[in-house]
Image (cartoon, rainbow, N blue to C red; front, top):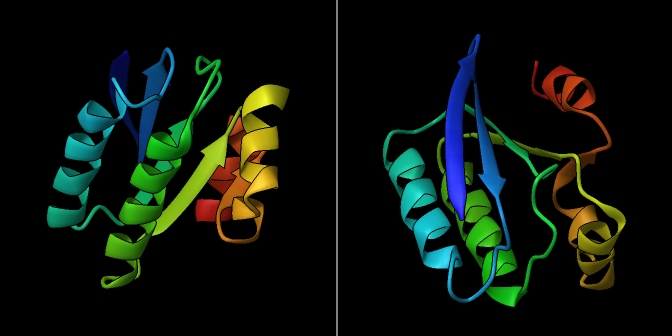
Amino acid sequence: MQITEAHEGDILVLKPEGDIDLHHSPKLRALLQGKVKEKCPKLLVDFSAVPYIDSSGLATLVEYFQGSRSYSGKLALAGLNPRVRSVFDLVRLTEIFSIHDSIDAAKQSLA
């Protein structure tokens, strides 16, 4: 799995590419823990190149979400394919995370 980072104004956009599973989630976890330490104010995760996520990937995102709450950090997810979206729906994380169909909609939610 590769993860690219780009700053768009005051929003950090992360784009993971590949499965987010038990094998790859530690890389994402380490990156997100660093963003919590830096107190990243606005984070958008572009899931358009993620075909699969498992419970370890979900736990990684929940951990970031909880850590960012201490400094009022904002998180938005975008571009989830139907398979990945169904995993979020199944465990009701759609009630916690700000999930959007497009990058532009996610950026607007972070504004």
